[in-house]
Structure formats: C-alpha cells, structure tokens
Length: 357
Image (cartoon, rainbow, N blue to C red; front, side):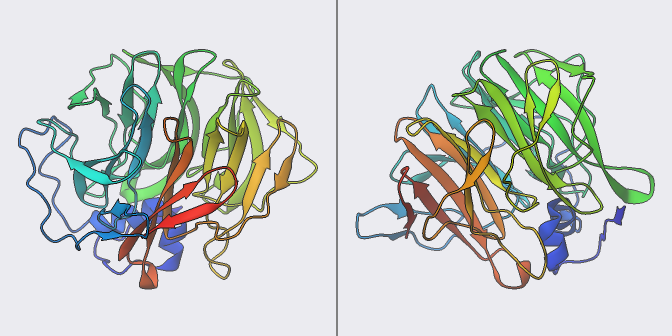
C-alpha cells in the first residue's frame, strides 16, 4: 500500500516508477471543478508552449511535456490522437508530419493515466478513467468521433481507476480492459485484477477461471499474427512483475517463454503490422537502473531481444502503430529529478528508430 501525498509538488523517482502516485502528486493541489461531466467550453491555445522546432526533413514537433497522456491511432481518420496528461484536457493529432492541437467543443475533464484504445467495430476511440485533478481516480467513459469527445452512459462501468491496461480485441470485436490502481479509504492505493470488455455501448465484467495477478501499468496489445491479446509485466503494488499472459476472449493463459524481458512497469507494447511483429520496449524496472532502453519481439511462444540503437525510453512513454504511415509512433517525456520538462516524438520503421527534432 502507498499513501497519496496531497502536498508534494516535487516528484520522486519512486513516484515516477509508480505513475499513479506521480499523477496524484502532480495534480493534487488543484481543485477538480470540472467533475466527471462533459466539458462545455473550448480551450484556448496554450501560449506557454515552446516554439516548434524542425529536423532536417522539415518535420515539426510541438507538444506540451506532461506525464500520463493517453494515445491511440484513429484508423478511420488516419491520425494518432493524444489526450491530456498531468492537468491537461487538450487533444492533439499526429498526421505523420506534425502534431496539431485540436479544439473540440466537448471534451473530458483533465486527467492523467487514462486508458485509451481504438474501437474498430464502431470507428471511435474509447477513453476510460485515469486520475483527475482532485487526486482521485475517475470512472467515466468518453468516445472520440473525429470531431468531439462525447460522454458515454453505460449502465455498468468498471470501478474508478488509473493506469489500467486496455486494447482492442479484433477477433472478438471488443475493447478489453484489465487491472489498474484504485484509491481506497484513507487514500491508500491498491492494484486490482478484474477484466472488462466494451461492446460500443456498455461495459461487461468477465470472470475468467485464470487471471493475471493484481497490477497496474502493464503493457498490453492485440497480436494480429497470432490472433490474441498479449499482456506483459506491470507493478503489483509490492514490486515489478515480468510474466506474459494471453487472452482468448474467455480466459487468461500464462505463457512460459524460455527467455523474457526483465520485470518492468510502464513499458510500451505495440503490434507492428508492417513487419508482423509484437514489439516491447522502454519502461522502468528499478530506481537504480532508471529508464530501460531495450527492445524485445514476441513470436507467440518466446521473447527475443532485438538489437537496435537509440531505443526510446523516458520518464513516461506512450506508443501506438500508425497504419497509414506504417510506423510505430512514440511520445516520450523527459525531465530532471522526475519533473516533466520536455517531450520527444520517435518513429520506428521496422529497422531503425528516428527521433524527430
């Protein structure tokens, strides 16, 4: 168990490893006046942002540096969508060349650590939960239709949580959500191990016979080649875990690979459709080690480390596969003393990592 510290503004390295504590600490001094309802005003452009810079190819990157942003690829519209983080409630789109801030008429309240995935059956991005500016987790569901964020009104919903894992199960045409971290009495935090699915209108809790242990910050995505959801690692509340699980629509099955990445939390796991590979990278494992910069490939039975230079890793990393560009897009936050100070955009083309400047 950990106690949320409402007065702290300086983030420790341990808080960086356990992102929910980081997010609550960074936000707790602010009053959550927006609640969980629909935003009603259009935010003005953030004039405090640094001027954009461009690399030798003319690619411009302009994004605020903040931990806990959520990101997913909008397949219908061919853009990567990024939302919020820290105390932000802004929406950004990556079109393959630039980050452009969008100004929807309605949007979720500010939050960090929300779960986000693209629902291919309904052509919309689903956002769930996270931790609000009050320092408490949220339990609301929002849908991005390409123009606005619209609040969903499911009859049943998962408990309020942050740092849950979420992905779209192509085989069963459902969003799958697992675990995360909740806040109990006295503001004590604990990890959970429940499994939920979203069908476009409602959440349904499933009760698999076997399940991963309670955890947050696990890496999870759908493996298109082997037609199953894959989950790796996370933070159990007592330490980092490094186990691998697959989901078949009804039950979780623990895999027993001969080789496995070091236990970690906050890693990125992305299916690269161009190379038909499941790619794991980044994350944190130990305060003495700091950010991880290794890269691993899952072949359905075993993990194999991939030799690559300049593998991104940072204070917080979010990643997704952009099909129209055939690239993995990565948003990295870095900072001194675990305080977010700048952001980076990285691309993986199947052969090399490229940092856009």
